Image (cartoon, rainbow, N blue to C red; front, side):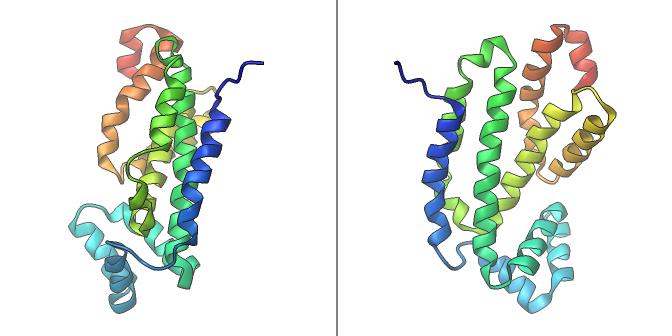
Length: 193
């Protein structure tokens, strides 16, 4: 029997790759800034910093990690980042599989994404919001265009959440790829995007 690599294998390999990060304790890089600001200045100061650098939407995940994680804030951030990174791999795969042109490349793109070169960056709690907002954006692509009001409302809510990471607009081409296969009408696609 010929072995065929599937998305479940890619996700399992990704899990094996990322899980060792959970054994590492302590804060790294920019995580020290968040921890210092929270411990010495409080939540209001974190929101003030977020507003000053136009990333106020990043503060709620930090506050969640700090309140829930307590002494394990960094580990909670890493776990969240790993879970969402694997989810993002799967969502990208689903979006690309929808299009005949990209279907054959979808697994390769998923492999490249799960093995992304930013491995070490997931050591810091500051990286988790990236993965959360990317997942929100990718899920919005799949949900907004499904039948049912509940899916559309949830999809638009996730899209709004993803605006906390403004560079995700560069991924809008994925929405076009997803829509094109279902409609093949450029006028309708432009209206929906």
